[in-house]
Image (tube, rainbow, N blue to C red; front, side, top):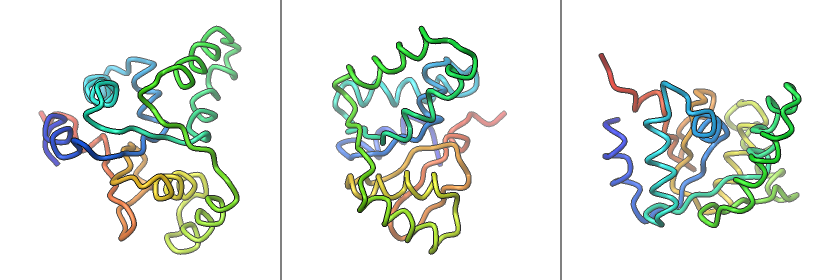
Length: 153
């Protein structure tokens, strides 16, 4: 796939959907993926790329802090998603759920993955950026796996 710089050049001026793991890697400063997701978040903040996500991503990002009882982190994550002007957060309406059901039936993927996919389609995204190999390229959407951007030894 190339480097993160190649990806950012390719996506310049485009709208992309960010899956949950992008935010978890960024917020946790994941040692393997932070150097990939941080420039992506910066490109969105600068307006070079239009970033979007769905309400389900926020909910998924909150699961671990709720499990561990880290309410300060819960509050911080909510502020991150709601106060950052760089990111469009899309709700999942009945039409999006219906499209997700169609995509699940067509591609036999997990429903949550189909919901992300449907939300990205409804938002007019060029691509989904994820590290979930269950979300695959199709005629509707390009899928960019973060693992393919890791530096090879």
